Length: 156
Image 1 (cartoon, rainbow, N blue to C red):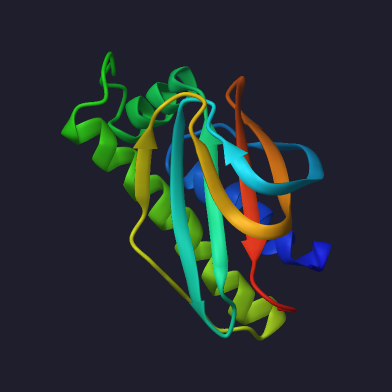
Image 2: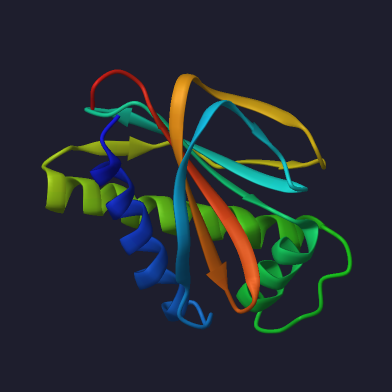
């Protein structure tokens, strides 16, 4: 897997999050992982299809998820993950991944469709996203950390 595939993800995050009321995010580091994502508490998984197949997983602590949901809901406090908070999280991952898909097309000439986001709230849950290695981009936003895992099937 080519490391340049993470650039559309990073660019999407940096473009979209400030438009949704978040401070400018910072990329902390990029590293490789094997096969599984271990949930930090809240994960959102979105699949890729068409010319590129794979998954992107947004992995964060419950505290980070509450911050994101609250910001998306214009500052309404989030104490538990009710339907509204869950919807805000899904919409965030949907918008981010849709922008990344647009970036894949515009910058790499690769057409990508995305699936409906799957939300899991469960600390230390293991999620298999690849048969091999995949990239993780560690991002910081408003003092909160989020890992974005990108696994691509084949040689995309």
